[in-house]
Image (cartoon, rainbow, N blue to C red; front, side, top):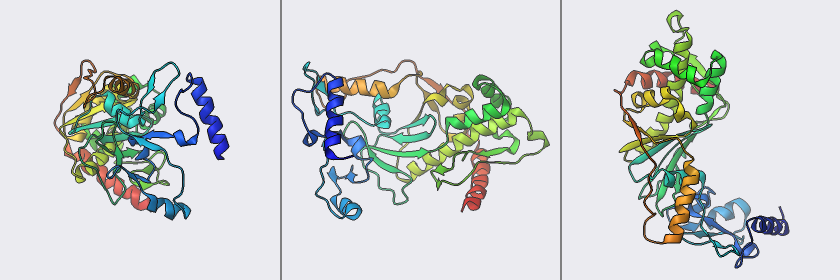
Amino acid sequence: MPPAAWEAALSDAVAQAGGLDDVAGLDALRTDRSEASGTGYWSAATGEYRLDLLRLAFGRDDVLLPQVLGPTCQAGHLRTGAPLGPGAGDCAAAALGVGAEPGDVIVSIGTSGVVSTVSNVPTADPSGIVAGFADTTGRFLPLVCTLNAARVLDAAATMLRVDHAELSALALSAPPGADGLTLVPYLEGERTPNRPHATGAVHGLALRTSTPAHLARAAVEGMLCALADGLDAMIAQGTTVNRVILVGGGARSEAVRRIAPTVFGRPVLVPPLGEYVADGAARQAAWVLSGGQRPPSWTVGQVEMHEADAVPAIRERYAVARANVLDRAG
């Protein structure tokens, strides 16, 4: 899009929001640390743009780049006088909304799966599995994203012709490990690991595991194992795991909540169902208005804790099945 079109689009957006009294033109572009860190050419570790990467990509670095705002900086003001906060990416906003602190690992089960944590130090993973994002508080948000999460539950429910409540009940009626039935959930390829052409697979199918309950259990465990791989990658980068916080639409499943500790090997906290991205935006707005060194205190309501003995055989069988799938996918 040419600069004139960008400027027109910006003006339209501002007008719909009530207008700005102190910002005009492309030189007024602003962004926040979390979104900037997702570009690949802004370093969360240094707080600077990587002009060397821009030169490699475009052969030049004399390009207009947004100013990256700090946690409580104001991007401008509406004509009503209301200040505009810096904003945030969805994962960073959710971490703020759920009140995550260093040592908290957030596992978000939406269409895709996200494992993230708030960290006092930046992450640099040469493999690219752990992305080195920034958070909303001036700290860092190491993050692993999988392509298949709640959609695995959707697919299993469709195959079994049940709704999600029935799928959950079926999964909980089967034993841990599903008597060896293992599902590798690469239903739309996968990005962690990076195998865009991989497909899902079911291993260990036998007469005794050919039941709806076993398949339901294998689907839940397979989805959680893929997320546990992300948790392992975070730990390999030095992440301390004090708590696992489970959020997202997939956390509505009782089976997911109860089976997660057996796969993750840790207690799992489940806050009330909510829109934590929106909560994070609200908390950031309150922080911008109130000032201070830390965000205002925030409560998320009654938190459920789910504990269960780890079942290492689940991850062990999954690792074997996953290796077979990856070998086949090249």
